[in-house]
Image (tube, rainbow, N blue to C red; front, side, top):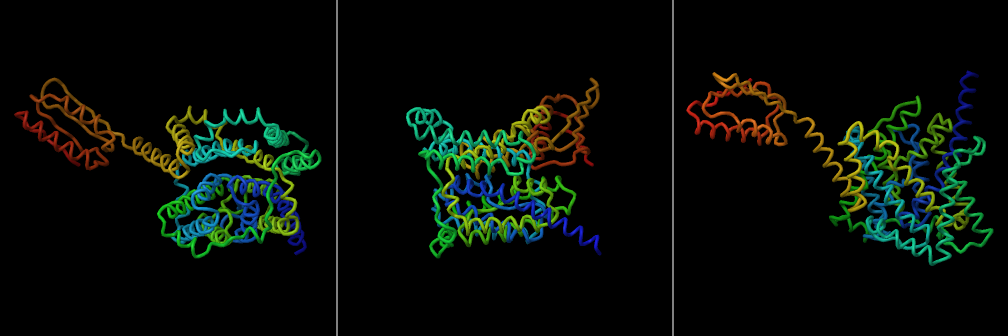
Length: 489
């Protein structure tokens, strides 16, 4: 009994320590994601609090930590820009209800069937848009609306920096934040107990206050003032086709990101494995609550989850208590948010955006499978050029086409011995994708010799190929004195 109590006490101590580490990682990210999404900073904290105190207690994944994620900033910013801040709550609420439905009908495990290349391309595209957009935020300049506009507007941003001392100061502060985060991992372990992002923001805030730098800071509204539940006017938007499409995009992208994150976290620890359907239900509950509070959508977040595992968490308590730390901070120390420079948080998001880019894996992927690498690149570029939702659809369509192409192998073997019948054997999967190859071979056959067409080896014959074979047979029979002999299974 004493051994059990001792083990339990050790687990509680490690979970308490891990909860503080996760809180320190989550704090700047919650605020930064909210600012990058174009909403009050407190809404990011509310989502983090719900992710800890509510979702943290629910079954699903034992080590994954939920909260606002950089991967949804582009989609949230588009939704807020199109429908307004008050509509965000009903969109997140609708996404949560859809997640509950998907979890209830046990579709959670099917999200693992989504092509990894599409997910990597989605994250890369989001990362590119985040980086481009936050470069403007670092300079205190308004970013262009479209992804391509952000990219092509960068030369103009350089002109703004050259002609404005306050803009150059803010940009330098953001660049310094990125440098601190990047170099933090090289410091001694006892220093790295404090997460690099938090240390960088704290240093930038202190430097701004000490030198009186003329840079923009976070606007503080207070936790209660930031909560804006959707009203009847917002609920009426559920009849809008565009809003429904946005809800579907929120739900599907958040679910895919969450469940891929959960699968990655499972590989980091030896504890209980994730129940994907229960995790999807937990995320649905969290997003319903966030929607009712008018807050940001939540997903499972790999940076916080990895910090949780690496800090030695043993149970769900660590992620629940991290939510309590966020609540205490938001309730007791809201003025601290007002000390944070916008440029520093933009630097945190740019660093997070770089983490989303498959810089190290794209070249090996190209060598192993050029088709998969092409899907990653096209999905990412489509998100930058068009939008998040359309970019993901383009990536999924490419993945389906690639899969169909690779599985529709057909072998057309012609045995012509110069005399007697010409034997043609079709094996494999005859689909419309391979129709040109099949017809080229058949149309080259002689019309003055008997033809034996063996279809016994076909595993699949789609309608297009069946129609084409029938048409070729009829045409060949009309031109030849000897009809084609068909051999079936």
